[in-house]
Amino acid sequence: MNAIGWQIGAVLFGGAFLIIAIYLAKVLNSANKTVDRVNKMIDYNEKNLNEIIDNAADITSDVRSILDIVEKVTGFFKVLRVFKK
Image 1 (cartoon, helix red, strand yellow):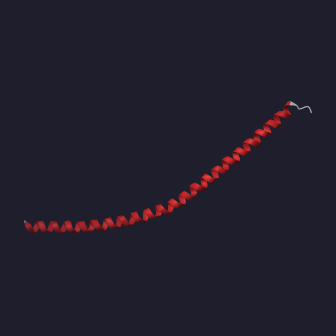
Image 2 (cartoon, rainbow, N blue to C red):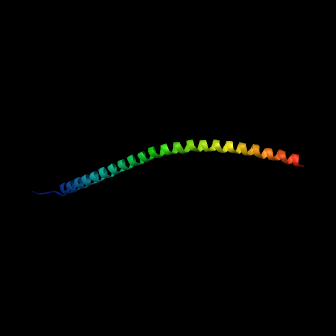
Image 3 (cartoon, one colour):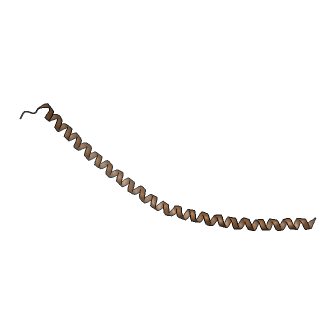
């Protein structure tokens, strides 16, 4: 069996292509698994972020009501200062 140079080259090229294709398939599979994990983490954290935003809104309204009460109390003490003089 006489092998010509281009036939040997073609076999080597085909083998290299097969190895690269297998490696690329493994890389794409790994990337797909990584993207799935990232999507799961985003979904989980999205729920937590929504809860944090809701809690922040509640805290803001509570602080606003406390500040209103403090304003009324300080206003009352200002009135008392006027009567002391």
